Image (cartoon, rainbow, N blue to C red):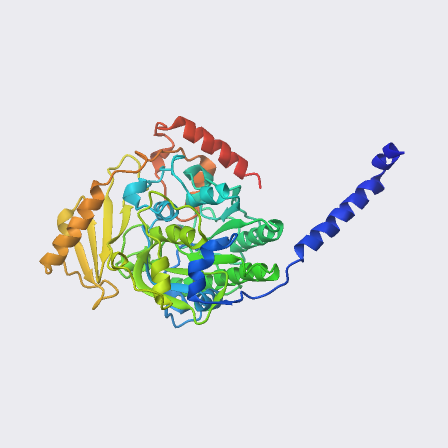
Length: 496
Ligand SMILES: [Zn+2]
């Protein structure tokens, strides 16, 4: 009898039916709702909660002054603006590089590029590094990373701590604009792929606590939704249209959280790895220098409640502060070796609780790029930026006499180089840079990985040119075990 039942297809249909009903019941036990109202005091007590989910959204290549909430005249960003209006907006944030990989390695580890050592195209974050997703995983969170920029791929070590780390690429772009290299391979898919994967995760995760990282890419690719761009046809206009499109994707993710009744349990963070130049200093694009147009980035932390009104932190902060802040807010263990600081005291002060601590005021904040990051067999050519109070100093170690100095109080766009006119300021900022350069990488030299043909094609699709001689001159692997581990992880990750 039992055997007859087990052999019958109806048994399996019924079983599937019961499971489906169960899933639906579990799915809709929460009702769609907005985040309930809270106050700055609730920022302080968030760490006492059972758990707070985190949705961490990186919009690649988004400069702050193109976001409406940062004062841009065009309404490029209604959904981002809505998060700023009910959360905490950081008005002055400094990225740690203008190149994705160096910047993201610093963002995740809370360490400056000089300390991560991740500065060149073949460098990876080593397994010894502690990344925030590992802390979440350890604390029992489900962790997913959905990304579209090859510089944060698994084999560069960014997958550490993620249960699921992959690049979706199903949708076809309606219209694509590539500026630098029209013959480059197009990057597959659109930001809609990331959004759809994120929504699937939000539904599938059930009631488990989660960390969800979404890395959007269409602003970088100048890719917009409609058949014609909304704001005009110059690159700068198309860039704005791309922001508007990615903003709609963010709206969909927030809708997905709302529909599952998760806004009361979920902190949403919006960040960027760097900005984009439109000839302010003779160049277009990014990953070449460290002027304000590529360095000033947006940051919003929207807590799992509605602040009315939203708060604004005017103090200058940095992307290395992001994870020390999030971990502090939700009461998870810190990144022990981070150079970034928790910004919670600044958030509280913006809400009228306490003063801004002296050591969070006027800190020197650094950024760095090896200007020969993409060329193999060429000496490194570091450029370092330090921002402190009203000043930015730019220093190139190969051309120490050509430092630049800008005074943001009278020249926010960094057009008038004041080098050699402010002796005291220059000496003091140069001392900060010299001290930074004395630091050695936290884990020794960053491991270098081989970039295979497929991966190279994907990176080229981002508009970056990689060394032509790379195939012939493959570098010796410094850390064979790490490379093999990452290769296994990467091939696994290609499956979805
Ligand atoms: Zn980037």
